[in-house]
Length: 122
Image (cartoon, rainbow, N blue to C red):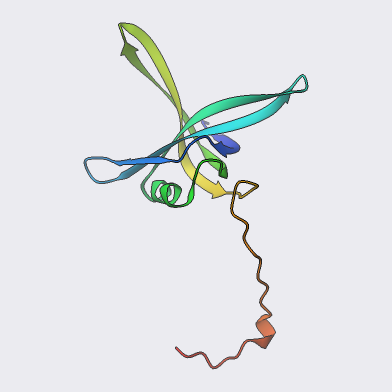
C-alpha cells in the first residue's frame, strides 16, 4: 500500500498549469514539523493535485494555509548536467483545509432550526 497523510502549512501560493487536454495541475510545497531533541525539524514536501482538487487548491489555498493532504508517494528520475537526480512528490488524492492562525478569522453563526419560517420565497 502506498499511502501518506501529511498535515502542514504551504510554503508558497499554489501554482496551476494545464495539460494539453486542459486538465488543471496544481503544485505547492508543504512544510511539516516535528520536535527532535527539543528542536523543531522541518521537512518540505512537493505536492501535486489534478482536476477538481487542483481547482480547489488554486482557489482557496495561500501561503501559510494549514492543510491535511492524503495521497501517494511517487519518485521520478531525471538527468541534470549528466548527473542522475531524483524528485519525490506526493500525488494529492484528498485535501482538507484545516484553518489556523494564518487564516482570516471567520465568525461562527448558529441557527435555531426551530424558529425558521416555513414560508420560503422560492
